[in-house]
Image (tube, rainbow, N blue to C red; front, side, top):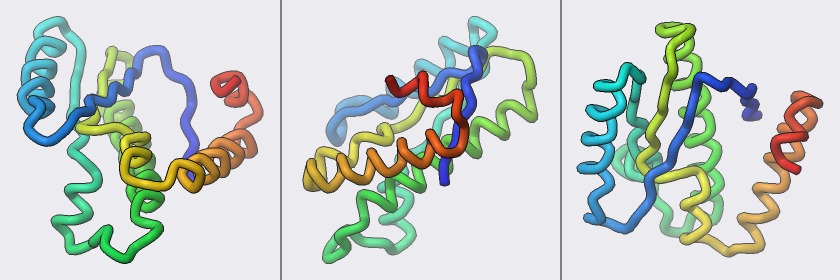
Length: 135
């Protein structure tokens, strides 16, 4: 399951909005601005688009939003590890083209909420200190 340790040198920011809202333009400009100030910035592409471009479909797939969420969290974790290994002590920003919770707009609210509760419960079981981040 997904786990994440607090790191004051790492920021993960989700940029959300509808199609053609300017997310990609903003992300490109944000990377340039951050890097001009000595902050390393990377962009995590939209998870749902990656999955659909790979042939997966949300049609007749009730767990699609859960799959997107789990994959999004795994990708965030892997990007964090890669950034940390490359940069170790510099300030880092991961800009996400859409966030982990964007799937809520495309799914049944109660089902999505139960799934999130399950994830947070698993996080708490992974690391007892992480509970303070969710209270």
